[in-house]
Image (cartoon, rainbow, N blue to C red; front, side, top):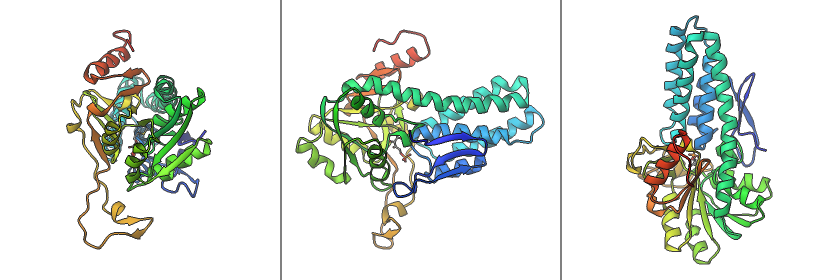
Length: 354
Ligand code: MRU
């Protein structure tokens, strides 16, 4: 299994996703600042992986603190959490992870500095284990939605590399294949950062899963030719009404899928669901460097001075989504109701109906 990220005695070990697919290189971040830089520079990326990397970075920063008392540690902890929170704005898993670490800090604080350090390191490692388990549960829930045989299109990378292992959208595909389904994956290359060609194609091929890489502008033609039976993508943030922020271009795929009557599914852990954000309009969208658009593999491919837009994510309105696959079960439209049910089920307040 690919080890996207790992806690080691030297620091946080990450597979460098900016170098794939031609180089499989691992880097170790020895300080929390290095972890923050790795998130910002997309050495580690994908909403769930960002969340766990941030938690590990926080644990690392706290462990290295020389503060003698809780008041001093709390001040440093606040600074570490702020640094992590400023890395990337869209994936809510980052803020979920920070909140979870803050809660643990306060729970352990009465037991003193040493206990806080131990508890936070344990918590970050627990989050990694839970993330893999959530992906496997999504796979179990989502596999039944996949066609018995045929093409499944995915956009960006929502695989082992975007999580702590197995993947969300790719986890559903992996589980469907493990259940005997004959699935051929179509991977959108995902301009401008090429997560589809660099990462999705790489990890699926490593697993021997039949994969065809297409440029983003080919998806409509593939659908029209009958080559795609379902679409499954990941998410960076899901609003309470079911609107989904995911990699730029996801919305285009969803509209194309609707036109061709192909079901469009979203797979994401509950840590990606943001019940405090009512609709997709309220989701902050990261704007990245223009150079990602004007340059390709270091070569300039656009005229000097051209105006450029580079939003890293878009929002797919809930009307386009057939189901949201979470580790708690499936949410079907109307999502404001089904997500609320899953929220209550997760809080242990009612039995999940789905
Ligand atoms: O900019 P990235 O590569 O972090 O964006 C990743 C995506 O948009 C993924 O689809 C999403 O985070 C889900 S990953 C399981």
